[in-house]
Length: 252
Image (tube, rainbow, N blue to C red; front, top):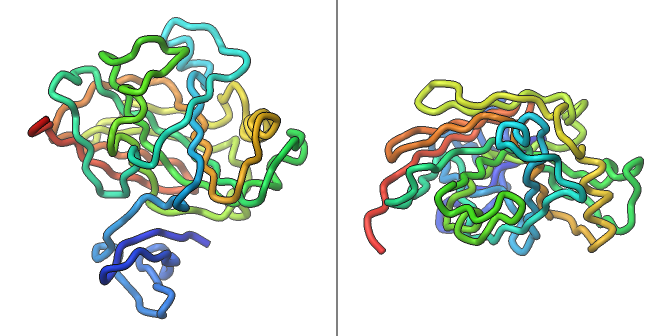
């Protein structure tokens, strides 16, 4: 099943995708066309959002770095999220702002001290993220600072959550990013340095992962600087197609 989080008639609700993903069914039974939906990031309020950096070998090479061990992990605040068809502000001095397509694994049941062999039993579903980076603000790729990875609405997420049972092998999915219809990023989840099972095992050694927690698993190679007005599309096969538009900064 695919589930979307939307704003409808003054309330936030989850809705199921029906009619071959061409409509939404609300809890009331009402059917809503996708074009009528006000899309929100499909995240459980209060969830912890983890992000991995430098987790694709070719991307690490592209940046001129070496693979990081232990993995580079940082947290993102809920202010960073925006939904499908949303807008993201490109700062006036953000001339090196580029999108990063990422598979997001969503925790389905609590995980603490789990092994890699059992870790996938704790995944509830998947979604797509576009995690923008602004290289002018980057102090150190091994230490993403606040201004780079926690700016408002710089992480579009969605459009929906796909149940884990519907993805036969999350380590064999193609990812790609297109800007104004031109492909600027392409890769496969097979190229992760640390796979999803390994990430969950690693994180669960430090803290308890709770249902709804989200793990952004890194991005493949491909750096393309974007401008206001650009439409950015991040696609992951079997998961979804996430659309975002960059807009110019208009005030302080």
